[in-house]
Length: 186
Image: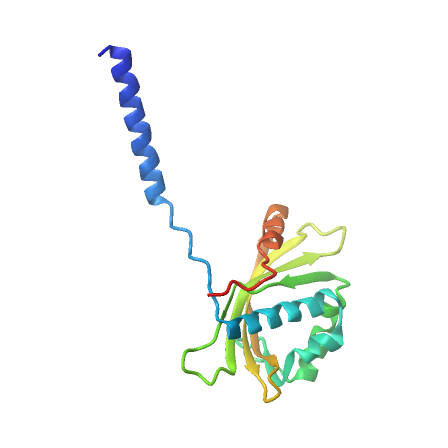
């Protein structure tokens, strides 16, 4: 075997070993969520809730709220009650200063439960509409607890989120691309 051939083979072995080590260090991609038909009902309702804000529809927004809902649930003074929440969110729903968008990535209903309480979570995107803004986008996350009423309609009972952090244009594009219009069923 020539010296050049041996060196080529040694280089190939080193490159393959380095590639294998890099792959081994890359965390596995999480398995996509698979949800039951009931969980997909909550998924669709969460998308509808977000759409009410995108459409600047205050009545539709309020219709997604339980009468005794609490928003900012982890705060010392959450906003309580449908009317108070709708009033507090009026500027957000109007969408004049900034746009808020969100979508679920997971909804869960407990096994053996009455099937009338569900949890939903996913990312949120705030877009500052002021052309002079130095930080156009911020990305956060939301967590909502839904309750199915006696009428069979899912409404938000508790809502909270993770404070948004500054985000780039590329992260905003990735956020938008991550939205699934249909629920990933089991």
